[in-house]
Every structure is written in C-alpha cells, then in structure tokens.
Amino acid sequence: MFKRLLIANRGEIAVRIIRVCRELDIESVAVYSEADRDSLHVKYADYAYPIGPPPSVESYLSIDRIIEVAKKTGADAIHPGYGFLAENSEFARSCGENGIVFIGPSPEVIEQMGDKVKARAIMKAAGISVVPGSDGILSSEEEVVRVAQTIGYPFMLKAVAGGGGKGLRLVRSEREVPSAYRAVRSEAASSFGDPRLYVEKYLDRPRHVEVQILADQYGKVVHLYDRECSIQRRHQKIIEECPAPALDYRMRRSIGRVAIQGARAVGYVGVGTLEFLLDRDKNFYFLEMNTRLQVEHAVTEGVVGIDLVKAQIEVADGANLPWRQRHISPTGHAIECRIYAEDPENDFMPCPGKIDGLRLPEGLGVRNDCGVYEGAEVPIYYDPMIAKLIIWGENRVEAILRMRRALREYQVRGIKTNIPFHQWILRHPRFMAGDFNTSFIDDEYRYMRKEEIYPHKDIALASAAIAALHREQERALRLLEKGAAEKSNWREAGRRASLRPASGFSGKSWKR
Image (cartoon, rainbow, N blue to C red; front, side, top):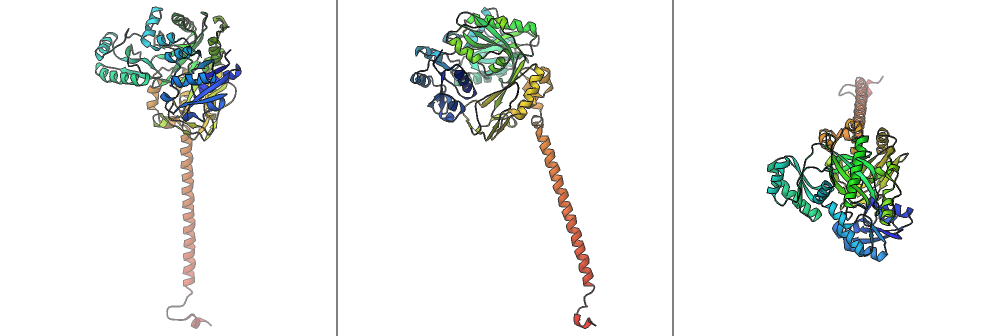
C-alpha cells in the first residue's frame, strides 16, 4: 500500500480522500492556493503545501507545481479528485514520468474518452448506440450546416473536450449557426484549450442516466448500477439519485451490460462512469465517459455499500477486485443534493463570503460531505459548491421525506445558498412522482413565484402584517385615550371657568 498520497484538489472531495487515507493508514498531502490557506482540507491533512495564487490556472491547474510538491514530500501517488486535472492526460503522463502513481486510468484512455468524437467512434465500433450526429471534427460553419441538413434541427453544437456544462449550445435553426459556432469555439478554446467542435442531434426532454463501473488491472469489470442525474440547471447536475427511477428491472440489466461492454472496449482500469441519454421511447444512447470519480459517487456508495475512493486507491496499487457482478446488488435508495453558495433569487449568482454559522443535519441515513466550517471563507475563484448532502432510505419515498427533514435542519448563516431551491424541488409533484427530465427546471422554475421557493416568507410576511396591525391598533387606542383625556380636561376647564369673576372685577369683591 502507498505510504504517502497527494490530493491534487480542494474542498469537500479533498477532505473525502483524506478520510480514506486515514482509514488505510496512508499519510495525506494537501496542496492549496493563497485563497485556500485556511480551508478545511488544509487543516485536515497530515501535510499541506502552497502552490500559488488564487486563480486556478496558477495553482490547482499547474502541473509543474503539483509534481514538484509530490516529489518534495515523497508522495507515492496522486489522487486528482474531480475537476481541475482529473481528466488531464498530460498530468497523468507527467505523474508516470516522475515515478508517481496516478490514481485513475492510463493517459491513453483519458485522451480517447476525453475526445468526444473518438469516444463516439469507439462506442459505435463496440456496438453501442450513440446519439446521431457528426462522425468527425467540424471546422467551419458550412460543415455544421451540412450535418444539420442530414440529422435535422434542433441540434447541439459541442466542444470535443467539453464538460461540466461548458462548450455547448442548442441550435434551433440555420440562422443561429454562425453565432453559436463562434460562441462555442471561443468558449472551448478558453476553457479547454481545444477549439474543435462536433454536432449531436438534440433529443427533446431526455432523461440523463449514468452507470458506475469499476475495473482492475487484470480484466475484471463490474458495474455498480445506475444513477439518475436529470435534475440539472444550465447542464449542471444539482440532484442525483441511485438507482434511477426511470429504469425498470429489464432496462437496468441491459444498460449495466452495455456499460461493462463500453469499459472493456477502451481497456478501462479504475473507477469511471458511462453517461447515457434516455429518450421518451426508453431507448438509451451513449453520451460520454467520465474517466474519474464523479461528484455524485456517494449515492452509489450508499446503495451498494462499496467505498469507491478506497477501491480506486487499492486498484491503482495493483489489487484484484474482490467482487463478482452477482455479489453486487442495490439496497434501498439514495439522493444527493449539491449545496452551492449561490442566490436562487438572483439568477443563482455565486455568493462568496464568510460563513458566520453552520449547522449540519444529523440522524439515521444522513451523510454530509462538507468542505467548509463555521468561520470559513468561501472564495470567489472556484466552483461555488461547498458541500453535498446525501440521504439513504429503504425506498425512494422514505429517502425524499428524510431529505426534506434534513434540508430543514441545514443552516448556513453569512452567505446565501441554494438550500431553499432544493426544498422546492423535493416538494414538487413531478419530482415526487419521478416524472421529470433534463428540462424540468427550465419548464417549472420560470413559472414559479419566489414565495414558492421560500415558503417561510409567507409566514414571515403574515407575521409582519399582524404585527403592523397590532401596532396600528395600539396607536389608535392611544389616540382614543389621549382624545378622551383631552376631552375630560376641556370639560374640567369649562367647569372652572364658569366659577371665575367677570372681567374687571377682582375675586376679592365676590367673597362674603
């Protein structure tokens, strides 16, 4: 087993990996930017080293600086977490060249699956259905238009190296092609350093279903069942479930077999995810493969009882998978809500700042993967996700009810979060019924009043109105009392005036 492991990441996933290192008796090395000097993962690790200024390109995306720290500390391996360098083949290759184990697949596999066009070709060759689209790179607007004439409008214009909701546009007509082409090409170049584009047919209101796979170095591959990730905002997942309510038993077995088939086709080793789109006719199409740990891996862990981070580390160290497919079965249902420091009332704008108060929910079936603490500063430079709330129940209904209760207990003071938005979703009839797709938030949120997201505002407004009414009543009562007193004073003054002498006479002359 490795002696010392460096985590090339930050936030809750870095804390998550450090916890596993402690359980495996591996020393942990954290790296941090200047903005993260007082972050939780820095405080929690055995060792911590600075790697640069706040901008990620000068710190968490700096391969040379991270490798330098790994060599300096004698780290045997590097875990990339997710995001940043997790799917960077150059980083994986640099680790190997410096005698450090990269906890993930080979650089060649990362390159193949990171290139969406190559990934589509590999899956098609393996007999797996892919979303109709272009079979190669499109290098001009005219080529995009020609492909669109074949597959029809609308379609998705995508960056070959895209991911995380970046580098894609929905194109509904030919007149939108020029602006979409320029926008996606520019975003792809700035975000991924790769301006290449391709086209996929737009599936109207599909469901997003993915399958977790795990493979060792000796050819054994198993799937850990499926997850539903259709609750998305701007192509970014915010709520995930395991197992997927969209699938029945037959479909679940079928998509699991396809995922294993796809992993074998690329010679995958480690933890990975194959993502699919499910259309209205229950046909599923390969979308992409994530060659890393997913944000939502915790719901799979809750249902199948396998620690995926621990499995990643052990497989990277050369261990055999101890499970066969028949040994793995889902138990119960798990839901994850991503907690973001953002303002749902202000178009979900990020809300960096200091956390003045923090109370995490507790109880049976409640798990908190948190990257902050009371008094911590949420920086503006990185993704605003500060934590994940994962709930397990014996069935989906129990998991939803337990999640509602946990969200009510969750308190973050000092910054705004999307917790009220999650509460609205968890109470929506369509979500409760499992009747939703990737357009759920676009369809429902724009028609929703703010009072529906923040139901407690109704109580607050009613209380304020009652208090105002009481104040008015008290004011009116005081005025009445004052008026009565003044009226009484006037009466008394009138009575006294009637006993006074007339003008020009002294009171003395009237005495007897």
